[in-house]
Every structure is written in structure tokens, then in C-alpha cells.
Image (cartoon, rainbow, N blue to C red; front, side, top):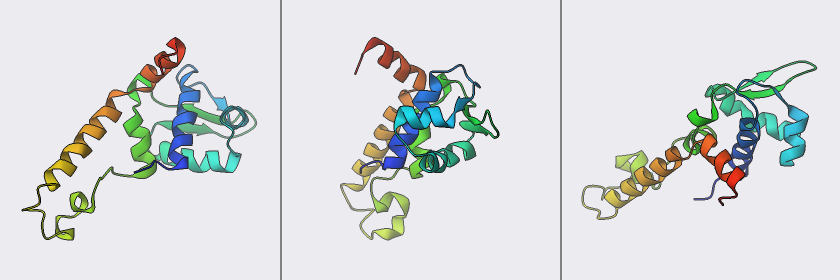
Length: 139
């Protein structure tokens, strides 16, 4: 699985906004310039985040985007799930009827475990933590 370019830019845009006080509007043009993304693509990738209540927009001359939630309340999982939808490793985790072997397959449980661990790790990383890592150079 490779995350999409939209997801990558969504993470970067949220990280950019997280550097501002919660609720402070960041101009669209500033996000675009800092993240090297077109205005149309930025708007497209932020729409799912607006739907999820993570980001809000302000129209008009001073328009832009801002975080609705504090960076400590936003996780990498939240951003990836908003862009990609539910995280599944294999079709059998989506629909048990997709595979006739789900009751006898030794890998089925492993796929579920991988999915849970992957999701758990993504939930452990908040944007406050990512900002801290950026400030300390902990890459």
C-alpha cells in the first residue's frame, strides 16, 4: 500500500496549519507556496478534512483555512482515513464473503493483526508530536 499524493499533501498542509494557534486562518496562497501545491489541488485535498471536522475554511479577501481541533487532538490516522477511507490490508477484511477460505486461512488473522497494529501506530502520532519532532530535528 502506498498513500496517495493527496494524502501526503493533506498531511503536509495540516502540519503547516498546526504551526499556527488553533483557529488562526492560514492564507491559501501561503499554504500553496510553502507546500508547493496548486490552489485547486489544495482545495480538493482539504475538502475531506473539512467534512471530518478537522479543518474549516474562511471565504473572502482574508480567506484561507484553519484547524478546528488542537494539533494534539489530530492524528496521522485521522488524516489518512479522511483521504483514503477505511484502512484495509486485504479484501477479506472488508467482506468475509470475498474469500471462501476466511475460516481456514492462516493468513486471515495476520491481515487483521497487521491492520490493527498499523492503525494503532498511526493513532499514536498526533500533529503536536510531529511538530515537536520537527522542532527537535528528530527525524
